[in-house]
Length: 419
Image (tube, rainbow, N blue to C red):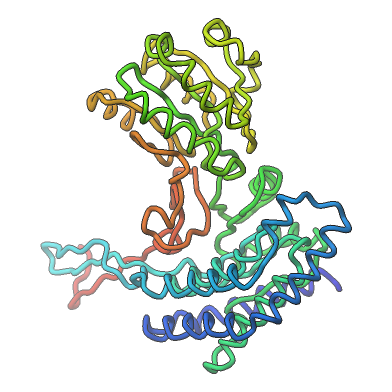
């Protein structure tokens, strides 16, 4: 395979398919998505067979059990994938919405209307369900998608793409509305990022820090994504201890490997003097290692010493860093210095303190008295998400359907000319 020729062909096909997809009505897109869900169910055995090939190769290559679990598809997971497509059908169409309208003194009628982004390139790892989730979201928002999954799920992704494309064929539509890069050669990713700005409008990376950093460093195309998920939970002196213990436990340990997992715990010293041991006991007895500053270690010797690097580490494991702070201002300064702009939560019963935190902390998601693990498009009522964005331009936070659109201005006149 000559990568340049292959990728140029993929880009050209996507551009052609984009015009066809954007001409579909909301009803047409929904019927197409329902057909995709039906195809996934009817091809259940074929999908599992392809997935088994990936599992065998993954075990031979020494992939960890946790990664194999993320890779694995069975009847229940495939049914959930089909249901996720049906959930997207029930969401409102984000395109064609009037976002702003005005009539000028000269009679011009000006409307700002939501439209698709165009062609979206998605680069991801491990989870084959992303193939379907990303495709369905892009279709509903009127976008063509070019998928490039990880080599460990190659066979699963190929089969899932075939299943999706079969739905297009049954509706007499261009199957290239969804394309999968059918090579594991990393040169294809490099070319996609650096040489396809004329055919790809946006790149979305979904995966670990190494993948996202490479995409952000190499891309000559706008990127929607986040590099780190260094999330904080701050316990104010007015916190309810029971709420604090429950929220901290869930934020750290519900699923340690996700980007919304808490990595640093900040606690007012006044609160810690009376309550730290109960918080530490809950984490410690659940198998969580706690790395703390000198002040916290004086209160509980189960805490190991934290280094400077711990404050800026995304553990993605049952480890949390702990720092005692004087007050909310010190907590906010710590988050500003070490945070990644993803998700932060405050535990407090003082509404004024809560409002100060929510207004002063400049992260994509800020929370009060709840777990950072709610940082998810589905939990926000956005349906499936294509990722979490921590940048300040375009989409921010969970990127659902609305984040996959842009807008244009439609101006109507009756012969007006500018003096």
